[in-house]
Length: 223
Image 1 (spheres, rainbow, N blue to C red):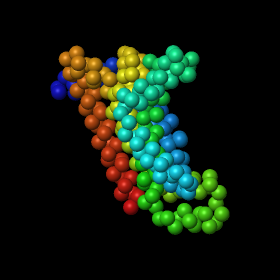
Image 2: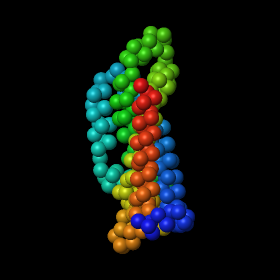
Image 3: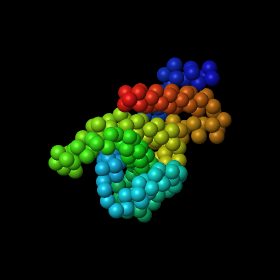
Image 4: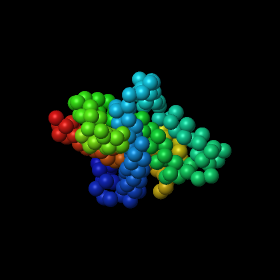
């Protein structure tokens, strides 16, 4: 523990580079997940269409898919023989970000939908009565449920920051390129080098606590 703290306090270059890389990947993947995820959640909330229950059930089911399965699915698309192979995303930052975004997307959609259901139903009915179009209704609902959206974003960020399967399969755990905190912990622990693994574990713990604290603030403000 003393050596792990020393790595962090001493500004060990590789340790902090790994932290920065993980956070960068997580921020971009979360952004790419919420851009379609939040509108989808709002659409499921506002929509009145046949098969809505099936669509909601499908989103919730996909949310529970293991990370390695998500990684395998994305791998089949971005490998050299896949339809997106020409983009050269595999074993690069782009592949990791894409895989993490796919992983977080159903979580954002499901949490947005579930959270928006807690809003007063009269709000949506009032917008419809006033003649608001689909786009204006969606933006108004998202604005009204902004604290719910913040919770879903924080949950997505926490999930992609702590996942290992997608990053390992699509990034290759390449030093100074695609190595993240979780893949570094897995590698160093397997080699018996626990100092850096423990130091990165402390950072992950701090991030998890911060995400939970901010989520708690969002819930309190929502009330």
